[in-house]
Image 1 (cartoon, rainbow, N blue to C red):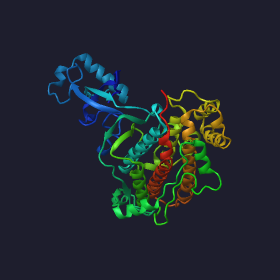
Image 2 (image 1 turned 90 degrees about the horizontal axis):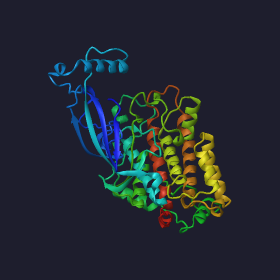
Image 3 (image 1 turned 180 degrees about the vertical axis):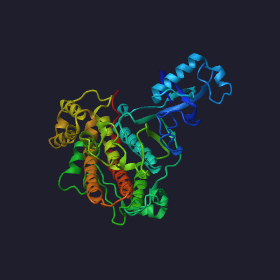
Image 4 (image 1 turned 30 degrees about the vertical axis):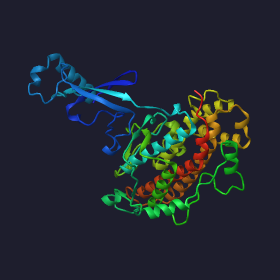
Length: 450
């Protein structure tokens, strides 16, 4: 398929494309459209554009449907030469059988906007939560989205009613399972009964925060004497560490956060996704947008060394997307010198970018953020970002110790899948609980002034 051309006007897009007969699929428009061929039908809603209409156009000379019995008679000598020349460029040799194609026009309506345009801190957090659920949906279908970036998380202008969200968890199979065993590779549906969920909900407590004073929230959460470790919610010993237990925690947190069937943000652009069910998954090249990669992944890419890209890297990417949405929010134009310096570091290399968290932590402790003319969104979100990053650091440490540091020398393909599942569900559960901890405070802040 040749590259599509796009015409835009007033939120309406007209995309044209030439499709070869062999690649024509009625339900497929293109990547980034309503139907993304990278994912199964269950994930078709993860898109930026809404399909309004499409139609084929076989009236253009030289671009006929290959099913036409009179094809050769209808194609001019010029068309034959052009088609062969085109295929010479594509395949390195002149084709003896012409590769005819047909044109298609797709009219799309824009339904989303950038995270940089969110109107409040809680709107940003909600968007990240919903995009994470979209990512988990992809993951449950067998795909790891490997390009989480500020451009690929989209806020919907109007919430969309969706089917009730279903949490499926994988069987926690042993590390020496046979890669060809289908049951070991399928995400199994878990039954979360009401009684078990209710018990977990009662025992997972939400710690109170201090009204709408971000400085006091930081003091309560991070200095000696705090009853709740940074970025955590008390979890009873009865709730285990297998994916099913984390699924219960996810379900409880979503209920407390008030997440319903109204979708408010989506994840798009799955062309770099990889199927974790594939026996060659760990042979995939490293993928993503450098500014939003985890430190480990970005460092490995910069040094050209092998690296196993995992759900932990995806969770780090969501963190950096949130950081960018905070630091470059369009409704917070006035920025302090501290923030401008952070802007410079965010677009630097992996080491420079990590310095933003160190500076932010120091600025909070020294109260610089509250003495300088810091933007409202950073004042409100700084504590959340620092706690989230520390939680990810712990996740990283456990990943390195439990997974990379204990890989059996004779491990076959797919040895990492049980760890993938466990850390994917754990990371999401911990983040949702962190959002729940700060929800009330963030919701009390006024929207940003336009």
